Length: 321
Image 1 (tube, one colour):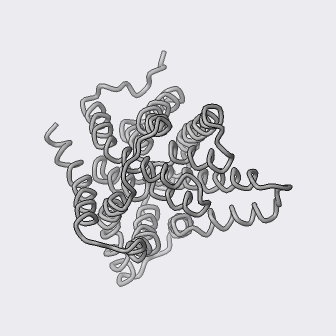
Image 2 (cartoon, rainbow, N blue to C red):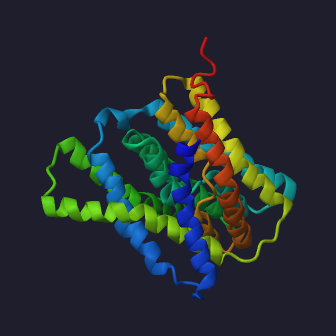
């Protein structure tokens, strides 16, 4: 237990420090703009690139793993979206945002650094696979729901172009493709460039976690609604359980890969969902409250999950005969 706390407390400690800083020091609404740009364009892409280019190539071809984790995320998205439609008559755009809030975890800011810190270098490939395919899924589903919500016929060409730009020109996906290129071509990395990328990747985790804390501190005052409980229950409880059941049914995954998948599914709502809600001017307060509440609750739920894995209390192949 002490070893687990020694690993997990520093990560949430950085979030808390960011939160305290965000509350103490006055700031403008866009004061985090440049820090977030540094994280998204300069720090996290080198982290992803360096992990992939040094990875064993066979790990990137684990089709059952990324199919299982992506299916889990899709099911949570769809169930939440249509539950909100049924209970609250939400519009299609709002359904997409609510589905994302329940299924899109903070896989970049928290997931990658936390997986590497808890499970070590062996967690790099499964974490990157979840990261890439979950991002791709959300960047397809949310714009699709928004396009279907607009009056008149859907302009397929414009929709495909929008999705293509969001997915394939995203810095995280570009870093992934560059890493695969260097790995497959066995391309050597010049020493000065390698040192620069190493410096940037080391900055990714601390900066991302601190920025997340400030982002949470900037959210409007909490106004709890019953629909938040549906989103948060789906995100921090049902999503990791469903991921575990699907991967356990598929079978063949070791403790690290299973642990990474469940941990990534248990993460709180991603701050990217707030960005998407702001872009579409839909459910902005709801996403900000979901981020705040799920981040607080996830400290307990993630700690409990990791403790269960650490003590070997979760069978990896639940459906094994």
